[in-house]
Length: 372
Ligand code: ADP
Ligand code: MN
Ligand code: MN
Ligand code: MN
Image (cartoon, rainbow, N blue to C red; front, side, top):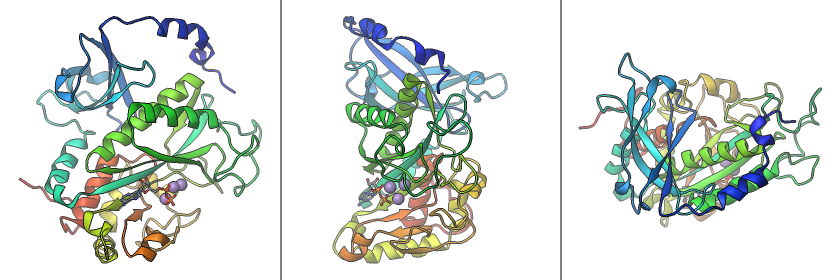
């Protein structure tokens, strides 16, 4: 299956070195989103002591032209630490550090959506917005073939694979298990996982996370997945429609609630939010994938448990709608709702910012409003 050279190196030999004491030094892996808005980059530095909070971490920089981020001759970009996690690969006391990228003039890089998201989240702090995102993904061999699929032809049709068990149905569980445990160790709020409808496709859920932390936790969970896949010599794809034809695409359903929605009779607030969303469908579609809707156009066809990209719809327990109210929420008259439109390769900061703008800041129309 795999032709990855580094996956063929002996991991047991590596382990001998990883067990060496590291003195009082700490390795900090700085991680950031590159100029594509989808891929992650990382590099490591040694710290003299264990950082306790994000303030203990120095700024750093990266060379923008190597990461699709350069702007003319001003190539150096700043890396600003924003969230810290335990490192499940090098283990304690080593750290994974998620960073924001700033340009030479200290303005956010084009693909840095965290800064405005943070500003919007601060404005609605008293609503205690919670999010939960369901990250779907597909495992590929590094030859670009879906993992475990027969080399000539296709596996049996969909139906047998969702939440499946068995060697002929669940392809690549080792990766899922390793990723799950690594996330829990890191302190990522992973709340579940399941095999998906297409073979070699899986999902993990992150949440509920309050405010900006939703984006931080999802991006680190994605990083950990890429890193685990590297060890196994396979690749993860977040493409929203990795295989054309009669195969499900990959989304990133975003579940959302406010304090009001979670309290008794909160269903009324959920319905109000959905009403506002119904009037701003195209704005959300533009924000929900990195290509302004073009990626989702391949996925949101109205088939394969998706809604049509051109129409807004909502319903209880309806998996063919843009917005779904879970059955239990309808029964309890309180809880949360699910926006099924975001694409698997969406930027979570952009998605949750749009939800707040429309549902809590009552924005209307095609574009976002600028606040002082
Ligand atoms: P589905 O039935 O759509 O497959 P999942 O079980 O995969 O649902 O995911 C449910 C998601 O909803 C999880 O990410 C969870 O964190 C999130 N969630 C649960 N309760 C809330 C809430 N009150 N507000 C926001 N998100 C929530
Ligand atoms: Mn799910
Ligand atoms: Mn799913
Ligand atoms: Mn869902």
